[in-house]
Length: 135
Image (tube, rainbow, N blue to C red; front, top):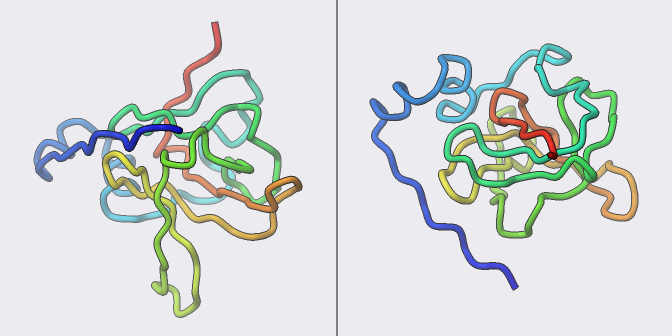
């Protein structure tokens, strides 16, 4: 069984100094990058996807798939405790927001229309992730 990640807490000034303006907008203000513009959408290399805010391991390349939605999509997180899910009613409909369990940064949303075996599509903003190529 995995351990709960240690929480990362920073002031807004610290977040602004650490992140690019686009990363700050997405991770801290819950924005979304435009579809098909993210650097990792078409990434097919083997490796790990980490939170751009705190470095936590979030997704493995083996769980990534091409959903055609315009954002990197994953069937499941690297660990069940890597991400947190929250109800999101911001667009007048129910969605499930996905955040980094360690720093609370907004990653994207999860939908129940992914491939088997999970049936999930974690639709994640490229700017919220850092990719580390396998060695």
